[in-house]
Image 1: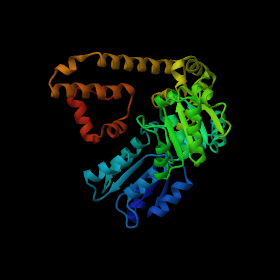
Image 2: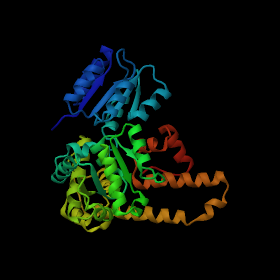
Image 3: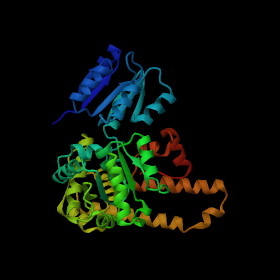
Image 4: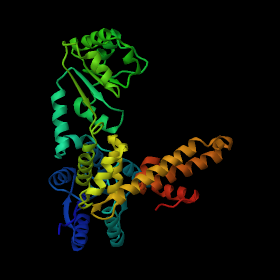
Length: 411
């Protein structure tokens, strides 16, 4: 059986050795580091399950090290901060950056073992798909997408069919980093815009769901894109009406162009493939979650439901199923339960929108009712306590008090 790997980072040798002996006796594989440099090397070489990180260290403090790891998306396991001089403010700062919990020295045996055990059962990191999914996933459908993006990256006009959302964002980031100028809804597509793009030092113009675009004639639109391309500015058009631009631009031979659609937007047969790819990715980000897989009945329900032609909605579904399914198998009943929960949330949202009684209450009473709806939404969704604290901006201790005041209970 694979041993759980824990890294202890502390500049005090007695503390490192003491914690190592305790955790090794409990059956964990323990690594120790006396500073940030040693910690970075071990983290890079090992698939860690947990890091116990001292806040106060001479070369690089623990919060700075945690911030670096999170910024580079290098850490795939929970982190518990340790300090002999810790304050509530320090703990809050650490949890905002991404620490799961906080241990104050001297650390009792009972507190250490309980915190380690709870941390290894921490909520899954499934809040948002990121660029790494496209760049590192080896599932066949993702490799095809990666090759497609690589081939169109050199062209000076790219038309992407689809709606705004997280998956579109990671495609744009993968293609252009942050090197693009986004055309505002009220801005004209003309030579003055070209000068603005050049002044900003950008190499790409992003035209995102720009309603005015269909008002241009074929000659006007082709001429304007020629203007940008001739000045070495690539043009990226993102719209659900790509066919309009396909006909408008098809006759212009002066610039290279490519028309693509967001994955699965029109092909339901790709839904099971992307569902499996999402699942594999999230498991790789959460090494202590164990193996999980879809059975044929679950994949078939996903394939037959038109909701999942929206790739962001499919991503949301897979993340929810992974965090709320206890066994290895994700079956049709699990998918149906997800859909039922979504229907209830949708009905609740519609009811709230149609209920104007809220606006006839005092501001104080309306605020209380909104807070109940807000937290109840996340409770039904299955949002973990740590994640809810981050989303709401309320420190965990105060969050428990708030839920109690509102008469709500976390499931």
